[in-house]
Structures are given as structure tokens and as C-alpha cells.
Length: 253
Image (cartoon, helix red, strand yellow):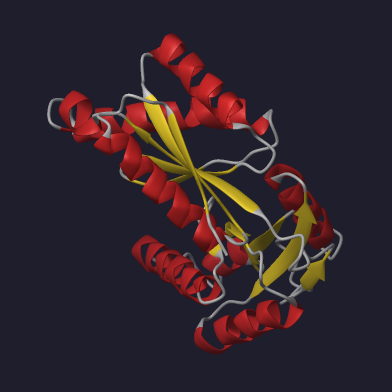
């Protein structure tokens, strides 16, 4: 099973304009610093955080228990002008896990409520025996030659976002999630999907919009191990001149 944590800045919208609108560059720095800080905290426990909307972040949190989450909340409170609330859920698929985490936190009050502060709402946690993460590291084939070196920066970004949209649309139907992780790279927590299903999705996207993708697929007990195995799988595909769509590697313990 996979465990997901929703991290939500408390009452963030009203805070950004109280007592008057705050400078946008300062808000962007706060969000970027918080994202980096959370990845450091979760990463120390072999978790992995994705920025999603920056005021709402999602983490693969297999291996983190209640006290780990509370400690992270305390650290953020001590060093930032804001606090964060969290919801935690575990399920067979990433989409269901984040849904359970979201519902748990929503029951505690609105994201823009002045009353809700530093809530930790746990629906379920994964036991060490049941902990399992499958992650696909997906990227665009030859993006430097086909886009970066010949198209404008914004047009290249548009095409990368287009690939992301198509991937998200297809993966969510299978219970998987997808996050942009920089460059032309995406990370998909995809427990429950077979290698064949992932390949079929990428073939469909190639046929529909002419963007060819490849995916290293990693499996492990936590996000760090699964993502690292996926990275190695992607390197294997590159070493074989992108001749295959996928490469699966499972962490041995």
C-alpha cells in the first residue's frame, strides 16, 4: 500500500492580503523555501514531496508515522510566519490514498478558516510490512534536439505542459498521479499499474500529439527507493538509444 500526505498552508489566501497585499516576489520565495524545506524533512525519512499548487502539496510518506508529521509541523511553525495542516491516507492506489488524506483534513475545517490551525488528520497509516511504492519517472525523448534548441523557451514549456496534461488525464483514470519535477521530467506514483498499461498510455500520447515518452519504473518500500530505481531504469533506456518504452527495476532488501 502507498501512503500519501496532503500538506496545506493554513488560511493562506487571507494571510497573503492581510493587512495589505504582500509583495508577489516575497510570496514566491516563501512558497519555494517551504517546498524545499518540506522535501528536506520528508526526505530524511525517505519520503518525497510534490509542489502541486504550492499552498497545497502532496507527499509520498511511506515510513512516516504520526510523530514524524507532528515534528515537521512544529519545525515549520517555529521558522515560518505561517503554519501547515496535514491529512494522511493509505490505500492500494495513490489517487485513493490522497483522496482519503484530503477528506480527513477537509473534515477538520476549511483551508481558509481562521479557526483551523496545525491540524494533523490521519485517516490511515501504512504498516512496514504492507509498505510498497511504485513510481514511474517519465520524460520526453530528445527534448533538447526537438524543442529546447529550436523552439522558443515558452513554446517548449507549452509542449511539456501539453504532455503533462495528456499524461495526467490518462493516468488518473487508472488511479495513478502525475507531477512535474523539472525540465521535461514527470514523476508518477502508480501503484496498481502494470508495465504494459504504462506503455499503452505513452503509445496513445505519441499517436495523439506526436510526443514520444519513455519511463523508468521503480519499486520499493518507500518513495526514495522507488524513485531512485525509476531513475536507474530511465538511464538504462537512454543507454539503449531510447529503443524501449519502459524499464522496470525493483529494490532488493
